[in-house]
Image: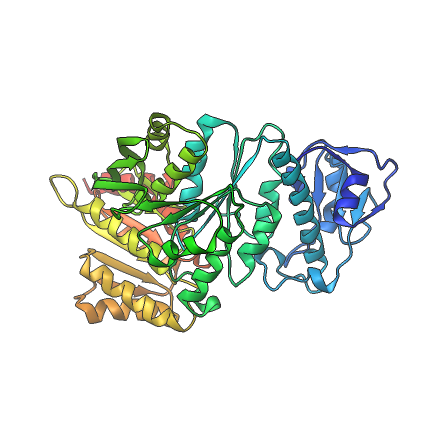
Length: 504
């Protein structure tokens, strides 16, 4: 963030200084909500949670070098205190679990106000461009590709992983300083108005809308409501901004009428301003294609996995070109960009020759379909086809469509001829996925329903073989990454080598 005195910060957030000997002391570092990450010159954010309250760590934070604490009550050390009001109590927040009195909401509102002032000053100075990305799926992968293609043009700040809610959004925005050229922000929503609110925190100059799918369908109620909310991003763009829209998604393409900014379309459609043709996949499901742009055409070979990454890459190209990059630089950056966020199409081959596709961070019907297609591509490439395993868990937040969508995934796994489907969980959605596979024609134990992660691991340990390809994917709440991390662990590899030697 830009350097500010404690008095300036208090004025910005509407707070009161408590136990502050010198209001002119400056915050010269960053804003942190984890006291273990505090460094000299930082501002500590005291948030309540289900298991702990950040206010209890205020003294430790200042001892570690924090200049002061942004808090909802006095904490006995230098603090800027903000009070809860009805206006600061949010309609939802992952970050505010356990915030019964609205104190955490007040601190987050203060954080948002601070981020807005910092971003406004950096933008006014002429050095910062804010890029917002939204969509039902692909936001994190696209954010990572954007960071890669913009890096040759100057310093880039982007959130780690999917840090895209009321806490992660302003926290990321406050990482930008006078040296930052690009601020790339992933924007999530679980209801109308959420993206518009995030856009108020850090007004975007460029907005990317990837797709309108079924993620969070249970909270929105319909794809039309999802489309309306995703379009809040392009509505927030200035007239001299740029809206990047997916021409292959009719609901996204229709958002062109909702913005005063110039529109750049991307996709495989012949009408797209930036498009891909001649798409082909290698043995690791990495896409190659011919890129066509107003500046010319070139061949691209991606290092990330899955055909769905082509659309993400096209969006990244559109943003980079709008920011002044040349085609050769963009092509080189895309070819070198690898997965930067954990547990998202992270492909690793173990010492004993098992390929593990860890895409377990989150899941919705669109992303699971894309991952299954990538799995099958990997297993069938090469001279000798390999066995494919899909270890899938529940997809959350689908509402009344949950059973139907899980049934469809089970059926798709059979239609794609996945060798083994392991469905993890005992809930109705998991049972529907397994039943869908059975009804589609799964035979014997081609699809198997196991009660928990431990059972899935035990089954894989008994039956997975050298050369197999294993996809692991579910919603974050399932924690299915334990399966992927077990398969790729050094301890497991040692156990398998020992078992092999014992049978020789």
